[in-house]
Image 1 (cartoon, rainbow, N blue to C red):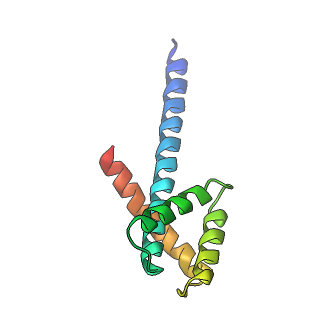
Image 2 (cartoon, rainbow, N blue to C red):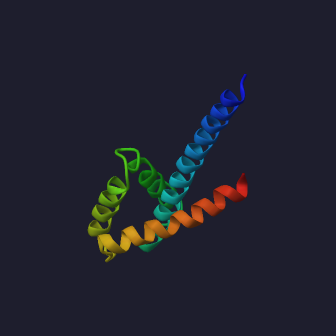
Length: 107
């Protein structure tokens, strides 16, 4: 392999690694967000895990966070909890930092 081929391979490997970390961090963020929101809605036990799993699954519907926010806004409206979509977006964003820290500490 030439030096150029080695550099190209290194960039491809780094890109794949970064994409994997991003995917894991998003899934972790969604789990943390789902667990937090489940607690706010008064869920406990296995219901918390199930709800967090449903938030993770919701993120697989489309690119971006709109699918997650749409799901949790509907859930919040159906419960006795009062959060605006803007508050939920801010909370979701705050969990991304924590998720990245957790993922990097495990690596």
